[in-house]
Figure 1 (cartoon, each protein chain N blue to C red):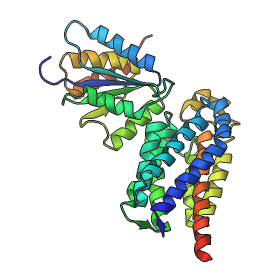
Figure 2 (figure 1 turned 90 degrees about the horizontal axis):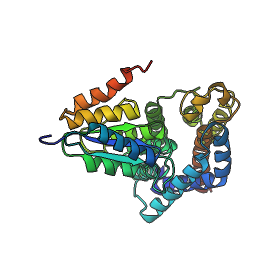
Figure 3 (figure 1 turned 120 degrees about the horizontal axis):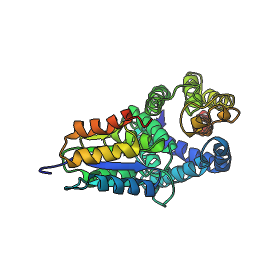
Figure 4 (figure 1 turned 90 degrees about the vertical axis):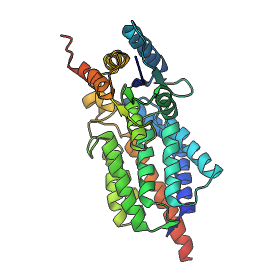
Length: 134
Length: 206
């Protein structure tokens, strides 16, 4: 990678899920430098749910000026990211991706680590929906 | 006219109503949700009350903006961003005036409910908060009490509906026969508004 890369935030109801998917995506993208991937899972007290402040902090952590993509699992994860975007509480160039959580995360981390710009990272993750398994 | 203190009393009354009804909200959320609506809202509105007491904003719009931001930060479930958006957008519409008219509040709430619909992608009939909020806000042209009653009736009317949004929608037809917890808490919010409005109007008439 040269220059700023797209940062990635994984938002899940579960801290373990967010961390594990981040670890898997980093592992599958390895072979060269891997972009910053932050996990924002669960509530502050360790329960299942969504922590808006953690999401905003995670987006700031991975922001290096090339944009930040967020992948969310379902329900409050999606709604919380959307409400943060509406109120401009995420770094400029932040985008919620319409993608399956795990497959989209792997695609986004691989694409971003290869130096793809924001639109291409988003497209790679969103294409994951078109991959049929049967 | 309604000042910042009025809006503070509304949020405080809403917090008290949630506290009173938390067990019932969680009970309603058990068969069709994840049994956390009461405890989530209780945590959220307790934090709202603390935030407003710590630093009471000077304008109605700022009271709702702070309340909404606090709900988004503390609730942890879908009701956080949904109620947070309702209050923040309503607050934004009210602007920074020190006092607002009932008509301005009615219009602002109408916009706030529209923002909730847009955020969640739901429509009336989907068995959500909107089934109480939409008729409730429409009845504000009559009175605050009429709005509270319409919201309450709207919540009751969710019983025979099949959920089309959120976790309850995964249950399909099995979501029928249960009152929606979000619609129920929305009716509490408008009920609290009617209570504080009637208290102020009664005091002014004396």
